[in-house]
Amino acid sequence: MFVDSHCHLSFPELAGDLPGVLARMRENHVIAALNVCTTLPEFDVVLPVAEREADVYASAGVHPDNIDTPEPTVERLCELAGHPRVVAIGETGLDYYRLTEPLEWQRERLRVHIRAARAIGKPLIVHTRAASADTIRLMKEEGAAQSGGVMHCFTESLDVARAAMDLGFYISFSGIVTFKSARELQEVARVVPLERMLIETDAPYLAPVPFRGKRNEPAFVPHVATKIAELKAVSVEAVAAATTGNFFKLFNSLPPKVNVAAPTSSQ
Image (cartoon, rainbow, N blue to C red; front, side, top):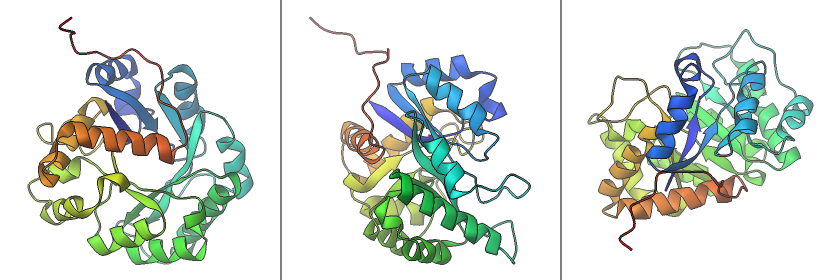
């Protein structure tokens, strides 16, 4: 059984086909998905899915790319994350890829998320792009090790992965690891221990091979596990067991009781 540790079911590309997306997820032995929030207004769409579907969890946070959106406070994030179906704070982080300095507002936003995670005792979902040094620095300064969390859709160097793991964070690999061009990332995946690893889709984006270029969805996360298994020379079952166990351990949750397609019994 697999878990998609990061997807955006509330984005328009998936929301209009949600029953089908969830049916295909279950048919492909994906027993849970974390539906990640990217703005405070979006939370009102993210949470109801988790309240309605036993195998969908929610987060509360504001993505670093979002500029014209209500700014979070520690108090507001803790209020939202107090709901029992909310298992994480985020996604938060730093992204210098598209935006240019001054970006102190973005760094302050990350600090607020870390403080909220520490205050409520729930893990962080961290996004970093072209900003790994500052991301790790702020995580250290704000005591992110106290909350723990995951570096989602990881595309950074092995040194960054090790720095994050030193803070107690997991490393999550997306469909990018299946791309032929992702050789450096594949080397990172070989080294990161299974006990510190998660897998994800980041759907509707970054569909893995053989679906690259198409709309992504949680049903495709087994393809990420298959690539990880190939890179680490272990079974897909080993990757599934480790990453699924890691998910429920990190997010302090029990596996949901849902109907998924089961192998045909010979008895």
